[in-house]
Length: 104
Image 1 (cartoon, one colour):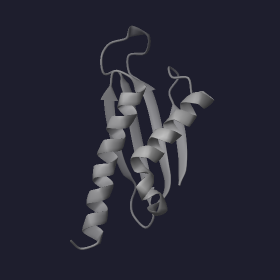
Image 2 (cartoon, one colour):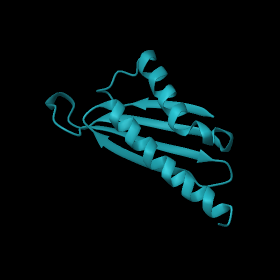
Image 3 (cartoon, helix red, strand yellow):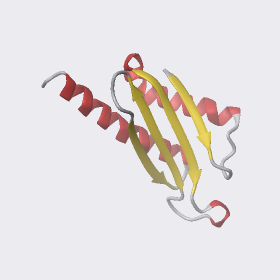
């Protein structure tokens, strides 16, 4: 499973951030790795220099083999919470899709 990180102009896409994102994705979505070819992570800061609550957004797009891409996003006050929230939403969508495909 390849993890591709994209950031807007207001978030520093450093190597440390990339490693942290990779670890969080693997922790939350690792069990789906055999079925996923790629996960795209988009991090953005809505208010940039203004600050404020829930201004960080994480959007995830998962490429499940043989299926259309699935997406989920979450807004939070910091990047880690946004990633965690988006992972939880995507995990629910993946569980639901896989469950339906098995015919339960």
